Amino acid sequence: MFMKDTGELDKKLLNTAPDKIGEYLKENDKYLAGGDKSFYYYFKDIVDAKNMRLKDIYTAAGVSESYGSKIVTMEKHTKNRDLIIKLCVVAHFALGEINTALKLYGFNALYSKNRKDACIIVAINNRIFELTKINEMLAQQGLEGLCEKGD
Image 1 (tube, one colour):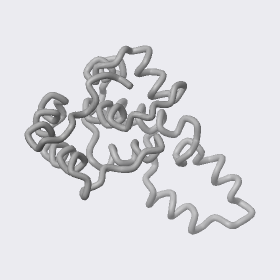
Image 2 (cartoon, one colour; image 1 turned 90 degrees about the vertical axis):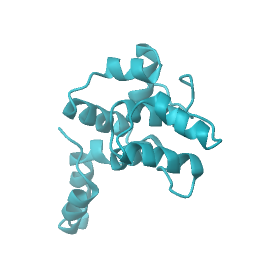
Image 3 (tube, one colour; image 1 turned 180 degrees about the horizontal axis):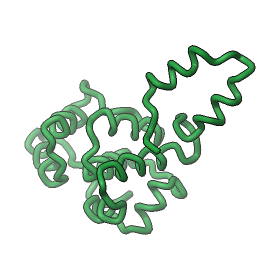
Image 4 (cartoon, helix red, strand yellow; image 1 turned 120 degrees about the vertical axis):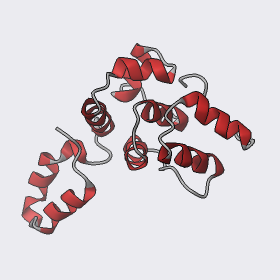
């Protein structure tokens, strides 16, 4: 089941009576921010839609399968925003998908007024999904690269 977008949920809320909000919340729990597994469901749905395997994503992001799995399922919560960005990049997420994933995980979306984020945005918009190329772009601008290790 793929992630419902905000517009679809907004339409449902337009026709939801106050006494039916509980039903809406229950029905759409996995799509709502702040749910224990909302990031995992979102991330997994996109990865599945792209016919990718989580194992391959962890490897490409430079994290072990066990650690990556704990981060994605939120069994272990990382404070490292770069790690979530790396996982999304190697999974070929589009900019909007990365921003949604970051928000669901509890981080700020990529921000065009932030130098590092601006470089990442340009890379993603130009379909550059290789971490080494993104880190080279960042280094050329005198910026710190995406984390070299998991956490």
